[in-house]
Image 1 (cartoon, rainbow, N blue to C red):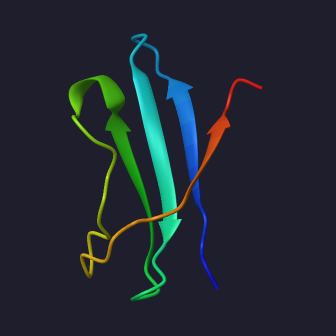
Image 2 (cartoon, one colour; image 1 turned 30 degrees about the vertical axis):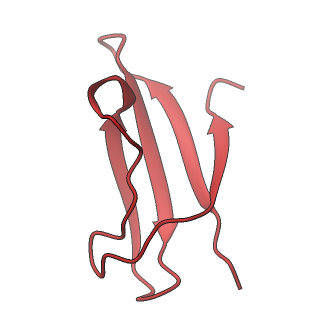
Length: 65
């Protein structure tokens, strides 16, 4: 069973686009959220921070809707 990621794009008080990636790792079962500034990173998070398994599926959700 493939787990989908939930990506929420939000604006903080300083006008910076922050992205929250919520993921449940299919390999180790860890559930985590990574918050990052897309403008300051070259790529989206690619690996589970606990077991280094690739994060594969993404479902984008705009929190403003």
